[in-house]
Image (cartoon, rainbow, N blue to C red; front, side, top):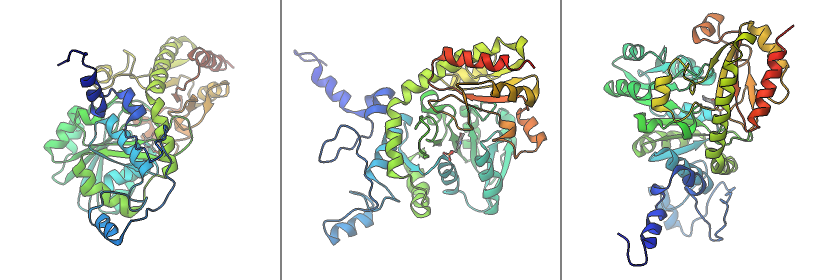
Length: 412
Ligand SMILES: *Cc1c(COP(=O)(O)O)cnc(C)c1O
């Protein structure tokens, strides 16, 4: 393969192809589209429209929707860079970036479902995702069945002749339950249904749903992809056929496009996604281990997919390359103990957001899951003593010291 001068030429050619890059390289260079000024950093194209050289060119562009841009609700160069970088990372053929994670979730399902269809979804869903499946889709004649996502038999039993989609998150919010992507995808495909996975909690660094058999992946880019708590955004990734036949027409005509500014922030976020998620996951593992050693002090349960005592540890090892940046844990003393702990914290801030460089903690029973009936919360494992911690980029030692202060505040 190499010539007398070594294989530099060959190697350069190989590395010129983004398909040969490792994930970290793609996060920095993937999808970069340089203007005539050859800028180093991705350009921010804040423009609604585009001008044409001639009416002939305009006619051709409208006819083929290729060879250039038409209108930023359909596509925009900065948005295209974000989509291309994500496609490379996820191993997807096509993608559309959206105004928020919920615009991604709702578009991913509504673009191909129609009245008379049926959806099976895991019960442990992000609140707004639950609204889409349980309240919104039925208004348009799409029925849904909610199952315990951990139970393979439950997915099988829920299938009907008109089942067209399976939808779930793994790990789920806030109890970090896992769904076996490969096994559930096989059931869906036998039934002729598409599998849509909300991969926010795992991030594209720790889990690749498309490689495990899923058809569509959605993200709230608001979380780890921005990673610094600034802008909202989302993205849907899947096959070229799914995007061309279903997602693109829906996206283009219903207006869920991301702002080019937000797409630019996401592009810059992606550059550091790998190192951030690695550091945050490592810190989350240390914190989970520390919490697990505090049983005598009132921490009765620690849930972390990276720990050997996670009830689905074998599955976590099969489909994830890390335990995630989130840790949930429970206090024996219920809401009162949880609030005392939260009031005892100095660095970790109270917020329902996640995936941020800042460590954030929330009490799901009184915030994100307040709307649910107590018996539904109990079914989902969301007790009054449960808190969910999103681990940030602070020194892990400081976070552990902060947690110890919170635990010390449990004593009356
Ligand atoms: C935050 C979140 C969403 C919604 O994303 P937004 O950007 O807030 O619209 C959807 N799914 C999961 C799992 C999330 O954490």
